[in-house]
Image (cartoon, rainbow, N blue to C red):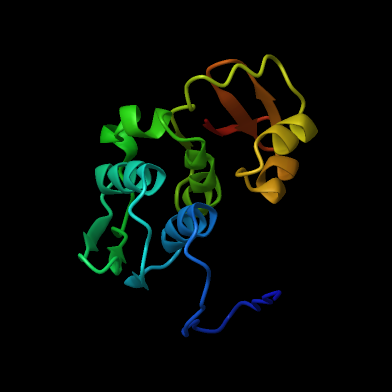
Length: 164
C-alpha cells in the first residue's frame, strides 16, 4: 500500500503494520515529527527498539511502554541533543532514521555514528546504498561524505547542517 500526504491539513487516523524491527524503528523515527502524542501498539521488545528509546528519552522525548507492548510517545517542544545517549546511538544503525525528523525540527545538529561500520570515503549515492535506513531524499538533497566514524551532510551551498 502506498500513502500520499498533502500538506496543510491535520493528520489523524490509524495505520496497521506488521510487528517487525524495520516497522518498529521507522515508526519510532516518524513519531518525532508529531507535535502531539503518538500511540504505537504491540511494539516488539527487541534490543534495536530499546536502544532507540534510550536515545529518544535522552533528547527529551517522553515514552511510556506498557506491558502489552503499547507505547505512548510525546516529543518535547524543542529537542535537546546536548545529553544524547551516545552509547545507545552508537549501537544501532537505525539512528540514521532520526536524520529527517531532526532536520525538520532543528537548524543544525550532530548525531553519533554507529560503531563497527568502516565505510571509508564515499559519495552520496554510495551512502544511500550502504545505509538503507538513511532517508534517500535527505542524502540526495545534500552534499554528503563519510569516514569510518562520521557522515557529514551539508546543503548545496556547503553550509554544514549536521553530521552523523
